[in-house]
Length: 397
Image (cartoon, rainbow, N blue to C red; front, side):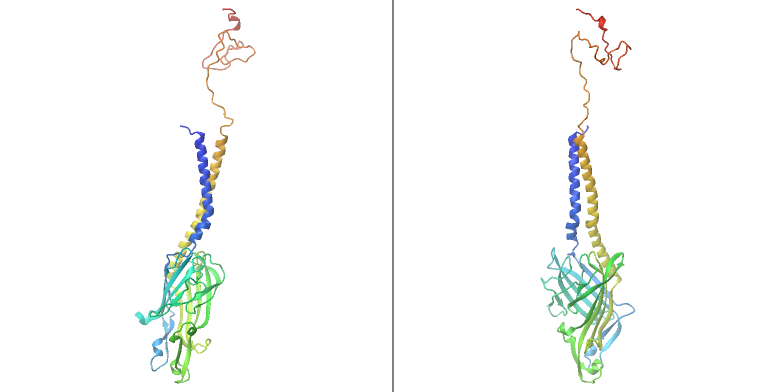
């Protein structure tokens, strides 16, 4: 059965409505959906491992040598180290903020159990999920000794993630050893595992750790012979200093740190610019498994952002525009379809004019009328109706 004009109008309205809906979605998705997706995830659970190079270990002070009655402080050379950090999300965490807790250890791999543990810290900070900047509510904390509670420490600057949409500029970056921030400066743009990344570098100038953490190990008075300096048995007081050169490679769309490395140096000295006894000197870098894992995580977030920020809006926009144009076309065509159209001919009986009615000679021949000139009908009708000649028609009946 043929469709009536009403169904065409309904289809046109449906297409116009669908097109308008898809075009609206194409405009809203980049602004609304990206605002929801482009944030630090609430389900982060990341393990990063950094190690010394196999052919170049660290220098590490043997702490037990400081307490022996004889002999001077011993510094072990070519020590293999591994730094492991486990990052999780804790409360409070909501649509705008997230609390990150990082448990980090530095260990000698040439010794077993607790004898190889050099440092252990638990750092906790609440950050803005978009900018990555720390928030004061709640205040962050750092725990350095297992038998003592964490100490409230206000955090400043970035730390575990960069902002969504990282730029080529300097950012303040927080150091948990110095408990202060220093600029992390943009160096260059490069590529890791097929990802575009921004390379940043930070230098921490020498910091007096005795002024940062109240610990006996950060300021010691020992005989000069124990320190290995001139003075015999005379006591010499030295301060523990810390400095670092840190580099990170960041995927800019998500703020994910894909690769990291640092040159950490701790030493005892009477003056910051004159190191005397090395405590720790090591070059630590993310291992390959960590780099691959971080790159895969960044790619996942980049793909999600691309899906909602580019592919879906473009697809919805194209399909919506086509549907809108098709609906308008059908609407215009349906609206003008009834004008100027001839109604189909309906066969009707000739009017009953009576038996004596005769055609007017001045009128054109009627259908089926046979002319005298040709004796043939003007219209080749299936059935001819032949009228009698006028002079043969009876005048009176």
